[in-house]
Figure: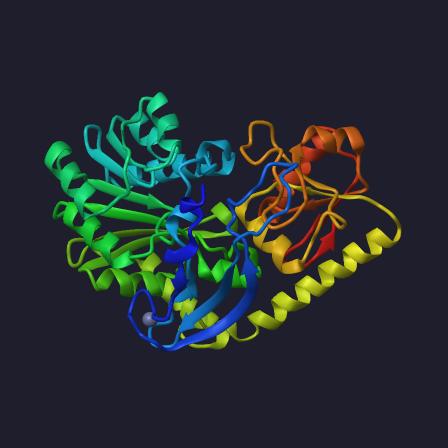
Amino acid sequence: MTSSLDPMNSKPITRCQVCGGEHLQSVLFIGHVPPVNAMLPIGTKPDAELRFPLELLRCLDCTLVQIGYDVDQRILFPHTYPYLSGTTRILRDNFRNLAESCKARMLVSPGDLVVDIGANDGTLLAPFQELGCNVLGVEPSQAGDVAVSRRIPIVKDYFSASSAGSIAAERGRPRLITAANVFAHITDIHAIVRAIRSLMPPHGVFISESHYLLSLIETLQYDAVYHEHLRYYSVGSLARLFAMHGLAIFHVERIPTHGGSIRVFAAAEGSRAIDPSVTDALEAERRFGLDDERALSGFRGRVLQSKLDLMGIIADIKRRGDRIFGVGAPSRASTLVTYVGLDDGALDCVVEVEGSHKLNKYMPGTRIPVLAEEKLYREQPEYALLLSWHIAGELAENLRRRGYGGRFIAPLPKPTIL
Ligand SMILES: [Zn+2]
């Protein structure tokens, strides 16, 4: 236990992870935040706990937005990593849509090999398998066992030059390589893009899905900033990264996952025509101010104001003696709870769906218990704080249908009682 929690390999990030520049400007300092997966079982006596600085930085040389601290991957992604993509309907639908988009663009045909990096429980690969593709996932965590039980073959390893070499030797070069929501998580991004490039055949395609910086700023998603997310991409910053490895973006789609993401299609430079979606996206980013300092200049002030407004709403409710339950404990909830400073006096508990690995534990760094959702319907607290506010509409509707009669609070983008 102690060795896996050794923080010694964690360290400040002093250079831009894409261009190597040292001119990093502070956008927002969120505070010292516990690792998202550091959830202790209810009843554990309080003891010393790890916290790491969480700061959003912008590279003045190439515009990349990244965080300023690299937490040891063994702390962030323990082998019991409790996240399974298949448990989220929006993600299942998204990956079905991805497979359909690839088929419509004639990027894959039956019999082609598709390799998914960070395959998790196989949710991305399943619809490609249904299209008749040969699929292979690369996944080091226990989530890979779930994929195997669904007959999706898994290389139980981290993706690297060495695992890419073994895949090429044993399975051949894949027509399509995908990486959804892992592309921001890997420390040495150049090593990964190099390994991807080495695995791609001349007409191969690489597709990444990442949380979109423009959406993050637009809807004030400071809670999407946590230590697992080292970088916050725009189409422009991804294009610069890929160009350093001879890859060009030829198609871009905005998708709704995680409160706004981008799906970016890349191939060897000159191998495919670049469609207007790319130039449109770059132009929209320029207008939004992502190429200079305009887009992020007021961000810190707006984030602070949203925290003060949320505290005001909670203060009024607590003054009346009413109860508030949090709903959902996604990673982003941990940043919000820490930044706003919510404790077990403000939130009686956070409720989670049956089967979640987070049940019967405390929210990171607090004594707020995570309990089964059934408690919400049984006890009918006056207020439910939607911590997965980016799907507030769908979530509130589901909770109503299952019998919750109280009122909802959306903490962002503008703290509101619905
Ligand atoms: Zn840079």
